[in-house]
Length: 408
Image 1 (cartoon, rainbow, N blue to C red):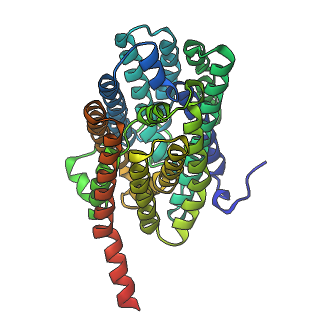
Image 2 (spheres, helix red, strand yellow; image 1 turned 120 degrees about the horizontal axis):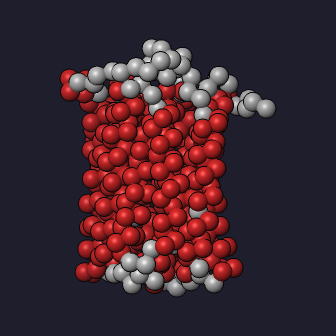
Image 3 (cartoon, rainbow, N blue to C red; image 1 turned 180 degrees about the vertical axis):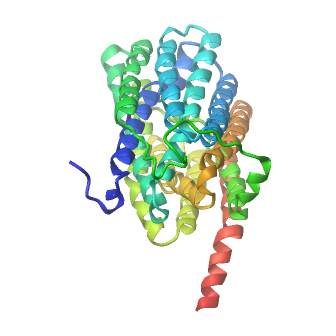
């Protein structure tokens, strides 16, 4: 039965729905591994926080750098799906490696290539959603996909907790089972995801090639570049979830219950993402994004100082609110400020900036934690989030406030 919600009345509704459920399965598989990866590295591989920070930074930045090339390539060849398929298959092949890691070398290899595969599929997927969305529904459609993607994280974290409780903290069994949802996602992608040639930015059904020149970057609006600067500082504060689970472990969470931290954050995130997108489409995307960034500042400040389980839970709720009100909106703002034929490249640029910022942010986080403790890591996140809010206010909100005053 076709969905009748107003944001899914077009012929592209089924594809958007398929992309969202595929994303659910992707994130479920990922969280079955990464919700407890920090504890696995610390308990079984005996790695310190500094080493964890470096591995996380390199792995995550590789993901974002690969997003640049895949998004750009999807504009060049005017095809999104082949790159999404390749990235999904690569993830399915890489997941079993975590189950056979007994040293940092193979762990680094598995972490690197798993994030690389995610990067290959991510930018073309975002560009595909933008291709299939109307100008007035960018935030709503990205919010819908973000909501299901985050629910997949909840399902993955709960599965991880259940498997660890039943198996007596058998990490390797859990990592082996993570192959199932990524395999189902790849099957769904191959069978159900069919880009619409009327909205996809290619002129014909046959293979096409479009040369993209440096001069084409002038087509991006000044607002896009300012958004990228704010995005950079926000990503400095978005260090790996590994540090969040280490914080929870430090205040008394048992290892088997660490996935609950991700569940709390993601349930809030998922419940907020779609309503925030609909609200932003109707009123103001920039103001909704600013609200989300303020939530992020508050979350980092709380996590810096709390020393109790309820305090960490409060911090994770704030993180969920911040993620729910920013992630889909950032993509909507990128889509609205770039020409259709360069959408893949625009998302790629945002991921390159994110990759560099995340590598730097995770390295800083690891060093701060090593030298001063985890509270210093979250204080750094508070500072970087505040800078992002300041840039957004100076470029977007102040201009809107002045415009409203003139109209008034």
